[in-house]
Image 1: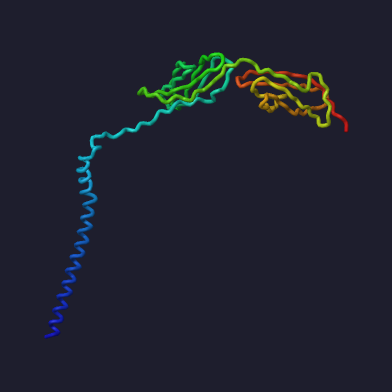
Image 2 (image 1 turned 90 degrees about the horizontal axis):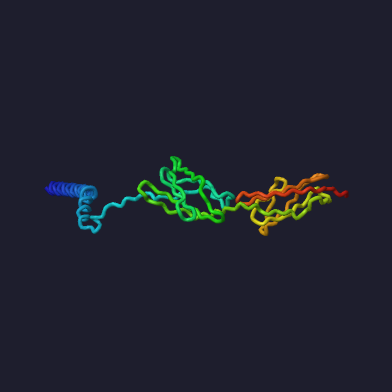
Length: 243
């Protein structure tokens, strides 16, 4: 009899454990379902509800438009020797490009499909000129202006002087070289018999010219930043000294 009661109690305990386990599993499943509904169903609805009370509810979305860049000029010179010049560059394809010389607008063109544009026969004043440009799109929106470029009209040739050697001099040494020195009155590119010489900050130059014995022609050219050219030639005699 006692054994039968023990088995009955044991069976009752197992049933209770099974029920508790089932309830626990159901609880876990319920929590998972609730979380899913909260995230994917109720959250958007609640968010929309609170959005009705937001101070930003009547604000429209801001449309972001690409900024119109100013045109880019290619290789703008510091100086030219003519009172007319051409300028080319790049801008956004299809936009208008306006160029201004010394204040007023001096020309307008449209950038091609590749962005390229060209202005020809722009009139300049003698001396210093200030040039800048702008781009304008189809809505009339203007870009910022470019940097101000300073272009000087200079048609005066540089003054060139060969200070050493002098015309008809005889030069003697052991190394078959002649030191050519001279000066100019403004910044220039110097060549001696077609070879580049270095212009010093004080506008003087010095060049070591290799020569053969006999008569030597020395030709010096000076080209300023505007393209004006001066040249001077002398003839000397070179004699190699014996050891």
